[in-house]
Length: 266
View 1 (spheres, one colour):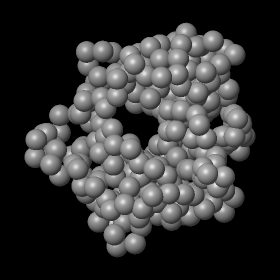
View 2: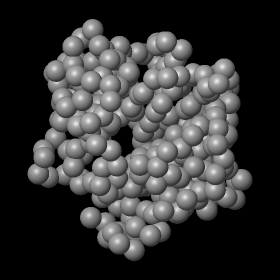
View 3: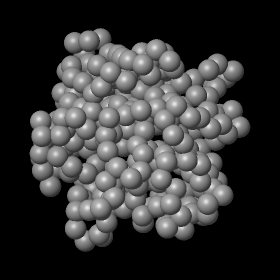
View 4: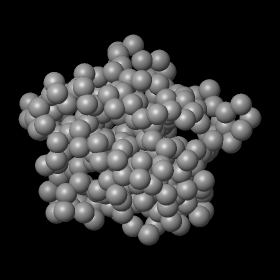
């Protein structure tokens, strides 16, 4: 994200697999759209929670010398330090707490999820959704990132407190009836966007790793159809494509070309 002259990343995972091991676990479907080795200096990284598909050891170890600041949730700072990040570059937030960086304000808000990277650390660190506030051309800009979450009434409270949002990044993928409380189905993703009073919705948490039983492209297919019924403006840029906050574009069904080239489950 380029925000107020700064460059920020959210939950960067640049490894081939979302796994504690390099040779097993969910593998990336599509090539990485950026050259990690030649990335510019990064003003900050937001880490929403400690799961492997959001907090990747290999990525953090590789990029942290180029990162000025890490902002995360309670308890995750220790994991970042274990990956080599200096403590003075880490800011932990509880729900409803904020931090500001040269015209950029970040607020951690509730989400309905869980945490843990092993057998004995479940829910020992916090998870959160994120409110990102900045300016563009002297106009205020607000972005909401749901992170991983089941649908819950807290989204309406976030909308009432912080909305409306120019752009929402909503968890739309890796759902199943067996874990309905921690990941939303596409109907719930659209409802979350409406609850937080979003103007344009970008479906995220899909089409990169095989984390569920549904085909990788199904989240985008379903949320496009449901969004159209609710007259929700969707932004579905192809991986690596630039989206400018505030712009209204027709959804790009790029996945339909790729779904004929990639297996439904890998």
